[in-house]
Image (cartoon, rainbow, N blue to C red; front, side):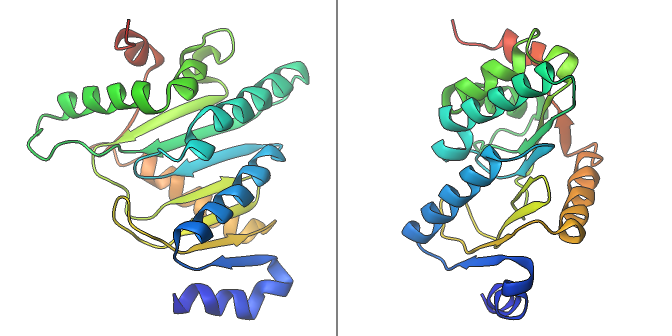
Amino acid sequence: MAVFQTIERLFGSVLGVAYFKEGEKEYEFAIDKLSKIMEKSRERIWAVSGEFKNKKIAGDEFAKTIRSKIIEAKNGNRSFDIRLLFSKSIEENTVDVEERKKEAIMKIWSENKEVAEIFIDEELNPNMKYFKIYWANKRPEYHFHLSDDNLFLETKHKPSRGREVLIIKNDKKFADKYKKLFVDMTKMKEIVECLDPKELLTLKPK
């Protein structure tokens, strides 16, 4: 708490920092802010999360946003980069990595169906040109969202537990730091894997 509050106090007026203390209402208000930030994005939406379950940033509302961003990019003949990295909680007794991945993909279909449909749409997202999903077989400790140069940062927390949030707007230095962190995480080959749309399509419920 002290770190986030100190950043807000020292840099709030300069960086456009907003601090949201731990609490359900505070978190949902922060999520509303993030949804609006993503709607205005022009270059990228990158996210690292654990469960990827909040409906506003993982359900049909989020799917509507990223679909529109991809269509805008295609119509304007420009790039847009969507990358999601998350784990999904799997039973601890599931040791085999392939089985864990299969369970995670089934959870994606049950919890993020609208997002999954965009990911596997070859016409909309050919060869994952606009949208990549990374699965981590260990839950990421730190969760954040990058929307262009806007950073949404959560304090370390356990699944379904409260967390504080810091939003830093339009700061390239902070954004570049977390962009590098995201890329470094995707290079952890024994932990993180880029999913193939064909894998999701194969496991799509009938």
